[in-house]
Length: 283
Image (cartoon, rainbow, N blue to C red; front, side, top):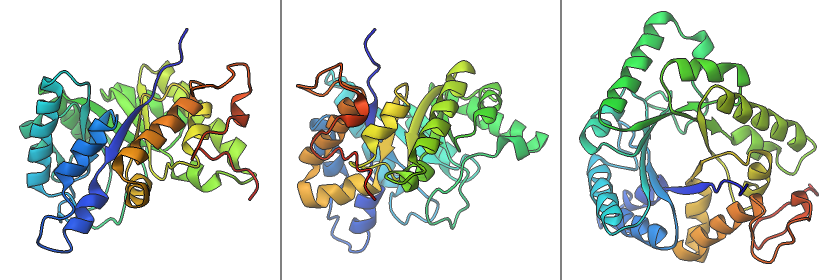
């Protein structure tokens, strides 16, 4: 059986953040999206926050049109809009009907997403509200992914609310990568991924994944359908360009799945070294 491939969705928030410091439209979010797609990205992610500090409403609409055009030309690609369904997200979902909406429990002033849905702590009314938002997204044909901490016991609750996928919040793995804690975190994420699959959910992942840790993450969690990567990828693109960066991340995905060109398939995956796919355990 062939190993499932993991889709790379590029989060463009940081491109918009730089653009917003001036009024010149530079760098272009649309051009960034097109160059990433042309280089082999499987999707584009945006997280339009209520304060529009990076992605703005016009960006969401223009990207939606671009992805529709791109798919109309026969390319496979997905548009993923992230945000809090109790703030501004649902208007975008209903208007743009993206392939996927990722529900994130952010407060309006939050610096960046830093926790998943604590579904076990939610009251009946809040759960009903979340389920209603999931149902609303489904009504326009949008798949729903819930941003979750890697807690195996929460996965059946996510499924019961109607979620199609969960996006595992990977910051703890990224922080542990290259330290003695790495094996424990790899097991925790592997357990959460298996629990999600057992509950009937597909699994995405994101937050602080980069060229150094992505392959190791996928070795632990090969069933992950999509990784959404923004900050590190855009940082790398400043140095390498969009095309080379997207190709480097896709190479790391292949290494993680044991599919890198020229690799002996019998070699233990932990010892695979690809360009830019660091397996650095010497910290």
